[in-house]
Length: 252
Image (cartoon, rainbow, N blue to C red; front, side, top):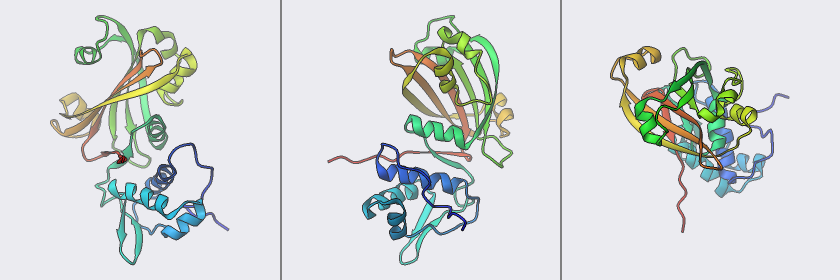
């Protein structure tokens, strides 16, 4: 008998259970194509995953806030078709697990560019030592089955890790994971800055958009236990191809 698309396949990790369920359902929705379909009922999700109704509702509320599902009173919960989501990638990037999931759900086609001096604006933002040579990677990120890229990313590796950076393989795991492997470091914290910018001509050509197109720029720093920036990445996402989502808990 074929396994249902929403059948549990593994034990939950050590994080809030509603978040685990939301992540699992989100991944299945994003892999499921553009046709709308009905999710299992709350009761069925409770039974399959061994969760309380409150937990299931919290997970569904998070997905609804992201625009991935809609709920009809007396009818059920339905997946929003891709056309209703504007064709954009809805992706939470609030912790390392979600960053890794983003990497797994898309393909980053990048190439090494060698050691370069950081662009002045980036160096100023992070307080980098003037003239330091960071190893540079540049590439485009794609969603499966789509021809247009969802991001142009420039990644820079700290000068102390130049030798490790030269071992990074484009077909391997996320760059920071490979740096952990080859450089003997451990990423313990990730910071993000998000800014709306207009595409320059060079960026527009790479992303196949018009010059001046609004883009979401995410500047991400991967830091080790000493507070050193192991990797710095700057990603530009066309506004109609990427949605940054976050689910915030209210305390008290």
